Image 1 (cartoon, rainbow, N blue to C red):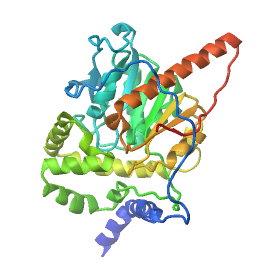
Image 2 (cartoon, one colour):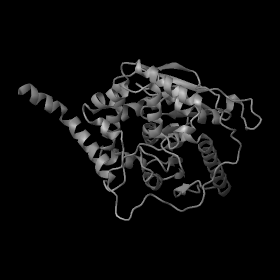
Image 3 (cartoon, rainbow, N blue to C red):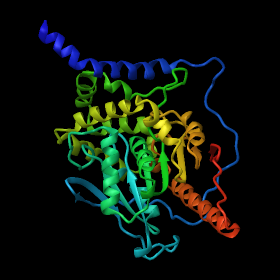
Image 4 (cartoon, helix red, strand yellow):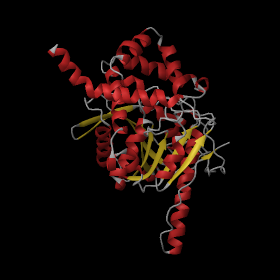
Length: 386
């Protein structure tokens, strides 16, 4: 009995976190009367007219390498400059601005291949594998604070500062916290379906990842079910969760997804990394007061582009306008028939949105210089490409 009591006491914080997550995921399914969905009616946003080139479906994931800085090591994929297309504007490779891409839960640096390739003529892109994901070995620490510290250390030690910082899902959460803590390191911030907290139980919020925090569920249900599926079926299951139209993915990208699943199956830490990262996200959502995610977002003055898919099943698109309102210098782009990974599903529009965002900032800076004063910021309302 004493041993059982000790086990229960040790597991109590985790059980409370799991129950809270389950409540937010489950009770949030209830619809408000008369609420048929999230809609908005605003003008089409500005997309750059500069050519970005078509997606090269024959381009494999860029090779990577282990990069050590201090006592830390990450696997990093760097995109080489493109200099062979007559359809794309280029800058000299030495003049490319630095950009850092941070993937989401269960993802890897390879998730950014197409977007990084489109931006490579003008940006020197590093995409990192967070510890325990992709080919980066785990550190045993998965808190969002630890991951934020790691990204800050990488920028400080390995990149020309400040950088254009991109983050998707969990990587979006980490990236916005980097901008909140170290604005001097971030020139612009681009968030793609960031994993921000939604604690409103009345929302139509169904986060399938939240239930993974329930003790035993991941090991005894998810992993056992996955073990009975072929890698190809598991790949399709993953893509159906994160994409609105998974069948549009190229054969090469599908094969790379299958190969990554097989590679991660051979890594003994894969399941534990996924489970602990889910719990770390949920724990970060429950931080109160000035250190809470929303309060930190409200202090980010860095120019920010927020991109969301209107069919996102992981982080509800209803969060998009709230993010746009809370962040002082944000503009929001909602893409139709896109889910959780706009950089994979529609890299061309994502690239054009980012370049248009930079053009807007250049014009704003030019007006400020012309007027000899700060023209201030004008937070944009959420808009949709139709």
